[in-house]
Image (cartoon, rainbow, N blue to C red; front, top):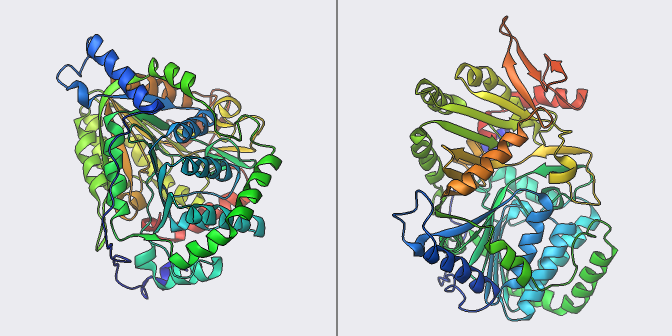
Length: 518
């Protein structure tokens, strides 16, 4: 359908003109997050700089904490929001109207109540909802954000008709414009601390999904990396692609505000999935003090594609093809949607010829939530093996699902991989939103942080090595006859692991569509 209508699409344009530029406020001088940054800066001054950072100014060093477990990823987002004293900026592709979305929104409103200035950018695609209850909760969350005087809310590349059917028709008839999506993901508090990585705001990303939970990776950063991410946020906020809520809709939301807050509180109290979390804001001072001693020190660069008047730049793709060839010994990649195409294969072949040990971890058909991606990935299994890559595919029943992926009391039926991270020579970590596919490379906006920290890199490497063990992933190899097979230590298969015949049919069907859509 999308291909049929593509020829009818209009030229890409900036949706509206920005009348006045608004930028991030300076880092807060007081509060728990300011104290956290000050504490680890004292550690830098008092101790010898880590290997590789001796030439880096102490004012350019940040602290990093890997968010491996789903429960921890949500808990630290709540901690940053509850601890903020001046500003919070959020930028997300998806912001679901579910338990996670309700809980985070309630904390954002509470922060706004105490005077924190909050700016939120959500991709318009991320506001779609299926089912009456989801739409009701979505509208409640959206109106709460729009009504509060301390919250500014914008949608990226919004369609004029935002009802499900109307949105679909407009997307098809205005394909070139609306196909550009903002896939960035970050939460910045007081310009002192940031969380960025692969997780959206939604139950399946925080271990609270009943049908599917994602294995994902974020990093919590304290210090200059927060200001670097703020600069990215400001690019989008002032781009003309982030469309503000109309004053008429804000006035309507203000009239409904008391009832909306009551409805949100009721929905949260009735939730059975959130028993691991406080429904009210809390004091995180002890947790922040403990966090300070766990931070890996390192320098960073946050790189992003940029929204321009004629679409989205491909800065991230350029950066990737400049960074990866610098690998000397080992490259570890975990990436959910992996369609390398010929340039990617050529780069991996070059690394192999130079003796670099390359490991790639991606989804199997069984763990893949977007079957169409597997339809176009599967043809590259052979070329990847020919390029000397050690190839692994996630198991839907991975051993890490109950402890790392699911958040009690939830136990999802299936685990899927959503991580987008890399480790280069056990020194550089690359963590962000970008997939290794045509959509991330050429259509969406993406962002990642390149972090020079041996401590963080070694921790992330151990996480990837754990995730590719037989209990968690299939090893993809060739036998002497040249046939590709999958093994997990106890079992060998000559057909790709899948959940059902229906999934296999979809896998064949979506091969008919061009890979550039994915």
